[in-house]
Image (tube, rainbow, N blue to C red; front, side, top):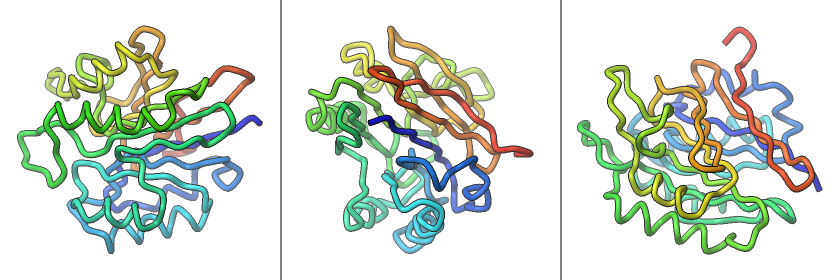
Length: 223
């Protein structure tokens, strides 16, 4: 069975663009890569998820570094949490995730050290490792890429995410966190995509074509 996945993140409570994503209702699955809120808790995250489900009920999500830790509890209760988890979303496609981020200078609510990130990725990966096609959803991008560079040119992504990708080579990594680093890159055969903030109109579309996954950056019309 072929699938079409729409992925976006860094909403920070902004939901106006969700309904502008092309054919969102027809997607097989929606993925929120992190930062549903701007330092918000479960109530605010719930409002975001309700808005997303208004357009398409098939969704998985994870808390980003700007979400309070209780957001993860809410996502677990909803049965849609990606952080440290893995799911088969089609016969041949597995997704797994790690939310939060590596430490930042801003003391954001949901940060992990690199060892914790490495452990959480492996925990999720273990649930889908036999899947022929694999998608890693990491809120923090891999270190030293086009998608983890700040305006100043500094690379601030996660070393653990990069090391995992170098070792295990999932087909695709969907990320975010660094708003100004919208773009794509490659580590080995793993294609990496950061769509930037949804407020700015960016998202990623992933399609299964036979035994391959084809992903591309997209832009909301007029966004």
